[in-house]
Length: 140
Image (cartoon, rainbow, N blue to C red; front, side):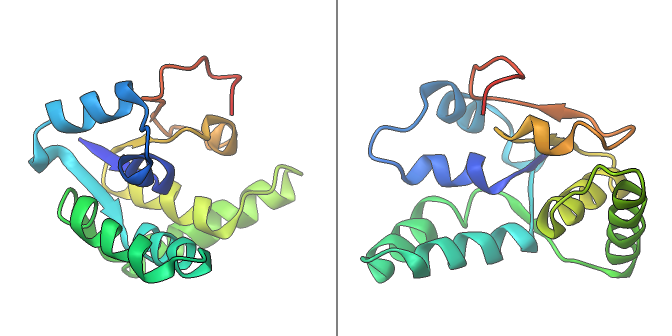
């Protein structure tokens, strides 16, 4: 089962989406696709910044929001994200707040995190990560 990062879900709204991502999204059982409420926040934030904010948001609502099962940010996720972020900062390998929440969500629910930003998560021990964009791990 998979936890989808914002960059995976938002790919569906692009004029020319990555074929590998779209193929994988629509060939995977909907019951195996999850997203964090942090991702919903990032989608709304990104759409709100766009000059055509409402048109972009309408596209998100139509194309993306029905796809995954949404996971709320609960106490266990918040505590795990806080511990993870502190641990990585102490080790000199900081992680962004949103990424800490995604990693914690995936780990506390035994999900594989799907992202284009594999490097953002390379210091998170025990986290399973996949890149569906058909790129090598060293790419964006």
